[in-house]
Length: 136
Image (cartoon, rainbow, N blue to C red; front, side, top):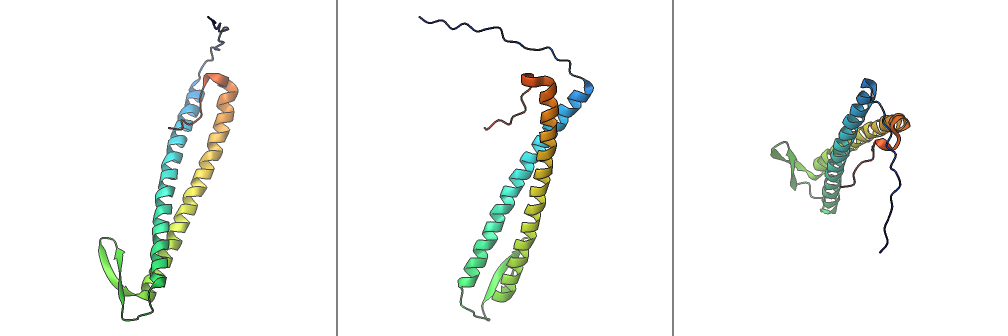
């Protein structure tokens, strides 16, 4: 029967100042915000893919000027010609692409802030603090 002997676990007693607590809180808020932004980016990318699919399907149709295609604006569908619908889809895609780009820039800025905070907090607390995200 093998017995494992654990050596003494050194846990340093580090004093947490008000400033440290503010940094920890800022880290938590930014982590939460980044998670929300990433979720929003995924939703917008799915919408963008749906618009691309609709645009592709529209291109496969015959060029029939008498054919009116319903396009949803808010809660109503309005019929437009194939060309008008294609233009509206392109405008919607461009708008969504700009929104996604803006959100990705916000995520990048937050990641920079989190990186700086991690360096500061790990420098003070070492292994006594865990700032890594759970992968659940």
